[in-house]
Amino acid sequence: MGDPKGFMKVKRQASGYRPVCERVADYGKVSLEREDPESERQASRCMDCGVPFCHWGCPVGNYIPEWNDLLFRGQWEKAFELLDASNNLPEMTGRVCPALCEYACVLGVNDDAVTIRENEHDIIEHAFRERIIKPRPPKIRTGKKVAVIGSGPAGLSCAAQLNKAGHEVTVFEKDDRVGGLLRYGIPDFKLEKSIVDRRVKLMSDEGVKFMTGVCVGKDKPARDLLKKFDAVCLAGGSRVPRDIKIDGRELSGICFAMDYLSQANRRVQGDRMPSGEAMDAKGKKVVVIGGGDTGSDCVGTAHRQGAACVVQIELMPRPPECRTDEYPWPRYPLILKTSTSHEEGGQRQWSVLTKRFTGSGGVVNGLDCVNVEFEKSQAGSCPMMKEVPESGFHVDADLVLIAAGFLHPEPEGLLSELGVELDKRGNVRTDDTYKTSVDKVFAAGDMRRGQSLVVWAIQEGRKAARSVDEYLMGASGLPSA
Image (tube, rainbow, N blue to C red; front, side, top):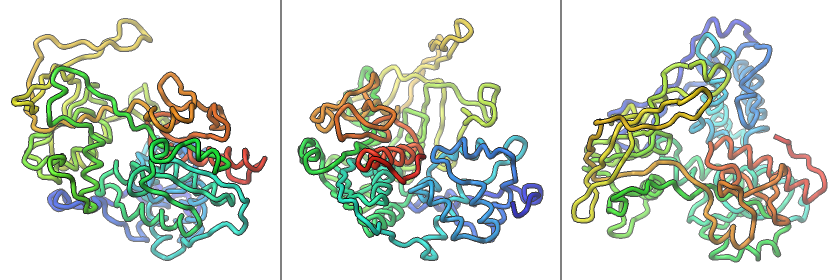
């Protein structure tokens, strides 16, 4: 380390955010940019710890202490080279990753952790700004053709790695634009779509082909791909949402969070919605069911659309604000997380069960809810949910957004036509090499492991790419992680 006492001299200083009153008026990114000298100062806090647990916490195994040291020394290009060696999409994780690495940071044992995620963001943005990043198409092509179905983080990282190996890669995307949930699932104020376009253009310049508006299994027979390509990787994500099947679910004004976010993102990009299909929160009382990141994104989007009020309800109890004995360092803790969207207003309620939706004239006008508590009947058993007697209450709502997570990938079409085996959760079953039950077909990302984080999808794509390369060539020079 350049300054072994840097963590003693410099305190953690995050880049901060735009004022709430300003940012809720547009869809521009909420975070502020740091100056390069401050990024170097923050990197100096990465101490010379004996065992860097940030590696253990990071799914893609980023070389965090190494590129932090280079950043501190002002060697930005070398820092980028190390970052690029393990992460195909650092500009995405630098914006939307929950920073598992920071919760495993050794400095975080008794002080504020290093600003690892922001350092990562600053390195990749510096590299783009200074034109350090340039297209690097492979010098030799293998003659092998690979189809990647899905252009989310798993599909993009898989395609990028296979292209580096010299294979001819074609990415099929059923939507009209590339990016999957990076484009249509994450609001622009967290991830500007120009960032996605920038990466896609770079990959295109390096030789990756993108086919949009093609739903394999519907518009194009899946079996045709097995004839045309030497290998196929399924990276279509987990798109079937978890529903809340209670009385009143048929009422108008109740929709899935991802449908709402996808439409909102399209409108920001200038797309027009058919008359009568717009899901707009303007002037409405909005209730978001689900306390996770997707629910938080709905809260922020509703604020920007001019909602009259926003209430977010969560079935589980309010998490503690600090680590508990159940989540000791370096484990990722279950603690209260307040996003930038929560800071912009609205109300959050925990331990709330929705019993029924109420409405008038076929349109939702509220929810009947009750408070619940979770009790363990005996040590080691799963907590049992019980309704709190006489705790029922009503919440007015003109728009209800269900953000209760996802169940599994869509089984109809692609998966059923290929005949791949599914696991008990409905995900695509693979062996340790990411190979499915069908020859030549591999799977990666949420479609294989279930709904998860962008950083896990990147890791899945990279590992699947290595397995595909080994399958095609007998050996692989791609990294194993």
